[in-house]
Image (cartoon, rainbow over all chains, first blue to last red):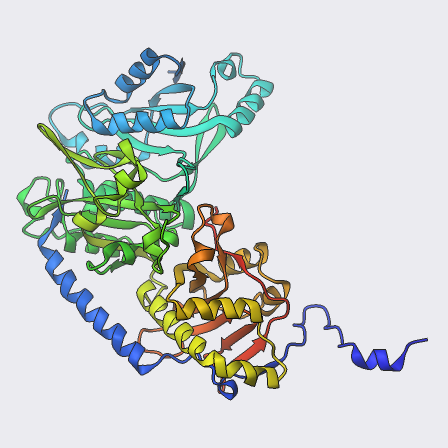
Length: 64
Length: 525
C-alpha cells in the first residue's frame, strides 16, 4: 500500500518528450541579466571603426 | 587503352629520391615539403596511376593551356600513398575477393593522393594528404578545416581526411587564387558549397583593377585585396575582413570553427604572399595567461609555394621556443632564409563566411565577456537571492570561477557552430545530465557563436580531452550587430540564464542540479 506522505514528497515524473520540472525565476528578480550594456556596444563600435581604418590601409597590397 | 598502375616501395633513400623526381624534383620547395610530410606520415609505398584526368587541371587546361601555340599534355598522373606495402593488393586478376582486400587495406593504410600535372614548374596538382597528429611534448596540432575526400582505385573507394592543397602555376592563378581555392574546396567537401576551380576564382575577381591588369592573362599572377574580396563574394560566401591589429587573435575563433582564413603576409613592398590557415597548434604554457591566443604558438597553413600543413609561428621566437624546425615557412634568398610569422608579417586576413551569419566572432566574444563579467560581479548578491528562491548554485565551482574572475584568470574560447553541431557536442560530452536536459530541446537559430568559459588552470592542458569548462554562452549568430538580445544562454556552475528574444520578460534563471565541469569542444568530423 502506498505511503501518502512519500507520494506527496516525490516530484511527478515528466511525461515522455516533456521537459522535467525545473525551478525558474525571472533573471532581474535576482539581479542577473543577458542584456548587453550600452558601454559594451560603444566599445564594440570603436573597435569596428579601427578595423575599417586598418582595412582601408590594406587595400594597397596585392598577393601572389 | 589501359590505365597503368605501378607500385613502388618507400623504404630506401633511393626510393624517396625516385618519388621526389616523380613529383617534380628536389629543386622545388613544395615538392620537398610534400615528401617530408609523407615521411612524417610513415608512407611505405605508393601506386602511380597514369594517365589520370583531373577536373581541376582540366578546368585550367580549358581556360589557358589549350589555347597556347605550344602543345601541353591534357592528362595528369595521380599518386596514391599507403602506410604499408601495397603491392599484394594489386595482384591480378582483380577478383571480388582481391578488390575486397584492397578496400580493407585502403581503410587501414590510405594516406591520400597527389595529382602530378604535366607542368614542369608547377607539377603539384590537387593533393589531399592525411593531416599529421600529435607533435611533441605538451603540444597538440589540430587541422580544424578538414573533410573526407574519396579517391577510387579499380572502382574501390579509398577515403582520406585532410585539406586540399595545390601549387600555383602563375598562368591561371597566383597564390591569392590558390589560397582561396584551398578554403573553398574545404567548404565544398565539408559543407556542400559550390565546387570552384582556380580559373573560376580568377573569373570571379573580375573586372580587373589596375593591379590585375599589369599581367596577361589579367590577374594570373596576383590579386589585389579588393579583388580577393570580390572573388569570395562572387563565389557565394560573405568575405569577412578581420582586424589587422592583433590579427592572430582575430583569426583564432574562425580557425577554431573550422572556417578557412586567407592570410596575407607582408614580405616587403606592396606585393605580399597569401596562405590558407587550416588549423592551429596548442601548447601548454609555463605561465598561463587569460587570452586563448597565448596558448597558440603557430597556425597550420597551406602555402602553395612551400607545401601542405606548414606551421606559421605566431611570433619570431615561437619556433625556437617550441622547436618547430623544418615545418615553418621560409623565404630564401642567397645566403639567408627569413622565417615568416604572423606578428611580423600578417597584415590582411579574410574569412570565408556563410551568407547566413550576421555577427562576427569579435562581437560574440565581446558580448559574451560583457555578460559574464556583469553577472559574475552581480553574483555575490545574487547567490543569496537565488537561494531564497530555492535555486542553489554549485558553490565549489562558482567559488573557483569567481576567484578566477577576481584574479583575471578566466579564459574564453569562441567558435561558430550549427545548432545541430552544438547539440551533438553537448549530448556526447561530459556535461551534467541536468544541463543536457535543460539545453538539448532549446529552440536555437541555425548558426550560433559559442563562448566557452575556462580558468587558466582548467584550460592549460596539452590534450583537448583534459581541457575543462565551467560554463558557456550561446549567442545568436543571425542577430544584427545593433540588437541587444543576441545572447541566448549563459551557463555558470549550477545556474542557466536564458533569453527568448521573441518573448516579453523573457530572461529567466533556472537551477542546474549536480552541475560539474565539462569538456571543451574538440573539433571532430
